[in-house]
Every structure is written in structure tokens, then in C-alpha cells.
Image (cartoon, rainbow, N blue to C red; front, side, top):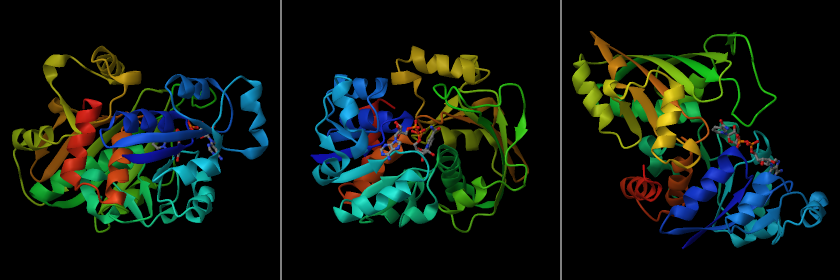
Length: 335
Ligand code: NAD
């Protein structure tokens, strides 16, 4: 059994912990938190050993009646691999801790690409992470774009990608984020930084991205145009995309017209926390005009990177190849 430690138990970390716990070949070595809040209490309810991330604040856990198993240093020593899901920038600071223990680490998309030896998306470049000590799972948006672009590139060749990302202002739990009544070009400068992030996975891809932020918390929405190198029929492209294990092509008959009903669908399906681990792509939107492909896809920012973190653990250890890992992860999650 691979023992996986999770440092940073917030939006991403708590989901990764549950996903690791569900795998047949992994177990949660423990999770590290800075303070004994509701998430710390839930971690204990789920049976995970809890470690204090900051030594000076370790006493707070005992005072709040929350049992700990030690400090984050002990967790890293205990783990075969650590998933760092701390806020942007903290992962880079934690790298020295992982190096000290010679423990391979996985970072999240909020870190700069140079935190790791390789940026990772299971569908696109799994093999590049084999044997690496430091791997960065790319952001939710880059994960969503990579999953879409990999099959398009393989099947039809890609000349140019133009994508507008309409991004949620904050996650549902982030009460201080916004805007609450505006539509923000974000960043105002064009192209946005998202295209270069996709280039960490596809170095030679010609891609321009534009970003907006809106008063929503549920999901991001991508408006995608890809100029292909051939002229496929829209039905054929839709079938290729529907055949991808982490793309859910939404049938018109479902009557899902936006991210609200989509999240409702996830809850009706019994998905934990209403998570949508796959890209959600409107089948009706798949259009080709000559060599131009168009579509809308929604990305659940809180969860699409979760199966990718699980696969990154296996890629690092070389335990399985991409196909076997993705199938094992999907099967364990029910994706
Ligand atoms: P979050 O704020 O929800 O969770 C981070 C957790 O880390 C919190 O529990 C916080 O208390 C804890 N923490 C803070 N400092 C710490 C430290 N020094 N040691 C250990 N734990 C510490 O953040 P998140 O949304 O889960 O984001 C984590 C990473 O994942 C970031 O790089 C982010 O960019 C990336 N990411 C976030 C999303 C998203 O939409 N939420 C999507 C994809 C990737």
C-alpha cells in the first residue's frame, strides 16, 4: 500500500484525501492542518491521523479537543508521497521540508511551474512524471483544457487555440471573494496567463486565452475555439470527446442549461460534495465550421484536479502506466 500524506486540508486537500482513501493500492498516512476548524474535526471523524502544520499553533488542537498524531514533519517522514494542497506560494516554501526527508511531493496549480520538475495532466503527459521527485498538477482550468486538447491534437492536429475563460469569483466556502455585482476582465491584459500554463503541458501549442471573473461560485465556463488541421464533422468530434474517460458530454435531453442544474445533477447522482471530476461539455455546442471547432465546457474548480493528484502519485512511483492508473482511479471514485 502506498502511504500518501496530505499537507493542507482545505478545498483540494480534503477531496484528495477521500480520493486516496478510496483507492485499492493507497492509504492516507495522515493530513496536516494549521488550525482545529471544522475541516480538522471532519478529518478525525473520517479516521485520518491529523498533524499540526505549524509548531507554534500545535497546542490549539488539544485546547479544541482535537487529537493530533504529531507535527507535519512526522507526517512527511511517515509518507511515501506527499500531496501538498496548501494555498498558492506555500507549496514552494514547503519544498525544502520534502527534500529534507527525501519524500517525493505533488504540488498544485497555484504554484509557479518551476516549483516542480514536471507539470502534470494524466491524459496528456503521465509518462513525463515517472520517477520525478517533484510534480505539479496543473490548475483546474489548465486540467480542463488539457483533457480537451489532447484528443483533438491526436485525432485532428491543432493549428491554433483561442479560449475565453469565464471564471467563478470564489469557491462556495470563500465568503470574502468577489465580485458580487460586476463582470471583470481578469486579467485585463490579453492574452491571460492561462495559455502559457497550458504550454507547460503542450510546449509547442499555439494558444491564446482571455480571462473574465463573474459573480458565481459553482464552476468555471470555457468558450473554446480550436482551429484544427483537418475538417472533421461535428458528430464525429462529439463521439471522440464522449469516448474520453474524463469528459462528460451532456446530452440535450438532460435539459441542463447551465452550471446550476449541472451541480444539481451531480448531487442527484450521489457525487460526494456534489463534485464533478470530469470536464462537462455541452454536446449541442460541439460545432465545426471548416477547420474551426467550437464548444462550451464547464469545469468544477473544486474537484477536477482530484483524480489527477491520485494519478500523479502512481506516476511518480512508477506503479502503473497511464491507462491502468486512470482506469483504477476512475473505478474507485465511480467516475
Ligand atoms: P484552501 O485555502 O481551501 O486550502 C488550503 C489549506 O491549507 C487550508 O486548510 C489552510 O488552512 C491550509 N494551510 C495554510 N497554510 C498552511 C501551511 N503552512 N501548512 C499546511 N497547511 C496550510 O485552498 P485550495 O483551494 O484547496 O487551494 C490549494 C491549492 O490548490 C492552491 O495552489 C490552489 O491554487 C490550487 N487549486 C485550487 C483550486 C480551487 O478552485 N479551489 C482549483 C485547482 C487548484
